[in-house]
Length: 265
Length: 266
Figure 1: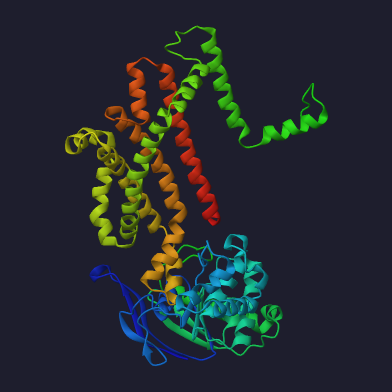
Figure 2: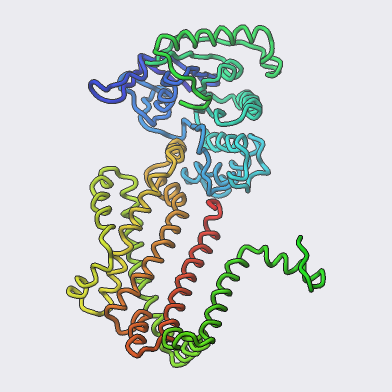
């Protein structure tokens, strides 16, 4: 898997009302990498992810997956959203099977893959439950299983834990890290949560806002044996402070924005 | 638990539980009204012409049931509603979904439908009679006209509110337009569509009676105008009660279907 973004720009609107949302974004991503895009609201990170998913087209520049231009969405780029992730009328198992049915797999194959991926996310006994009977964290796990079941080349996560409360968010972050380690999947994560980006990703691209552009890139090699220890370790805290300062400076270039609640934008 | 006097403990708790049942208040309310009616009618304060006794109404009902008139009238009215509403649903479903998914179609038709919706259906009756006579067709068309615009607009609104994330998830799982329509939109809007049908069916039931009051050979509305001509208020009361009961039955049937098939939405 090789994802190449070359001078990608995105402009919304026409003429005088046109807004430049993304400015000359270029980066590359390889198989098995965990890449995080970190930025505050207005940095265009969601738009960028939607372009990788094929849900939006760039105004100029190109996005290529394994040498082919990304023109439309497809199951090779699975995506998990922040909210409304599951189909509420389907059970967890039926949700996971959704993409498989679209592909036209036969019943046995569907059943096999569904139970496998539910097992992978640790929800084998929740197979028959409806989304409303599942907690927020469990719902997101099912959503991840559903994306994985379609066996994508790249997993896209758009602030997947933003709507969850803190305790659950932390356990979900551990879950995601372990999942990545055991499956060797290529993961592209969008977040505004500094801790999340630093704890999970190997590489973090920091995006500046208005217009969104790549301000800084960090290659991380932290000891992720125990996330809880890592979170409170001195070196991590220092790194975190530096990144927070960077973000704050980038934010200052634009007019003062009112404080936003996490999960917005 | 407040003590209920004069009853042994076992019956006290059973009665208490009965009182707490969600339907018990409603049933009690209807019972009280029936009781008042029987009381006032039997006291003879009013001329029996104005207020027949419940017994008289029941007797009229028995008479009509026995000679088949009641069933003939009920089936005539019900068939008209099913015909007109069925047609309306058949058109509203694809039209509403199309308008909900295609912005240009919506912009084209929504103002027109919004306008037509406010034209009271009964006002079309004279026109329909002139065009189509006094047979079945004008009545069925009246119900069609009276419910089509509401059904379409409510279905369109339901489609517009399908969460964008669900649609996009489907696309990122390899789905195409057909999958969006059949696997996402249709199941998602099903409870709202059924609810819209339940509500508009009530309007259809009203309309059929109105149409029959004007011109009909049979039906519950016709039954009432006929009764009026002969000053048979007991038959009028019977007609009203039967109309109300059938309307209630329709409503409960829809609710039951909704609860069975759309359990996830309740």
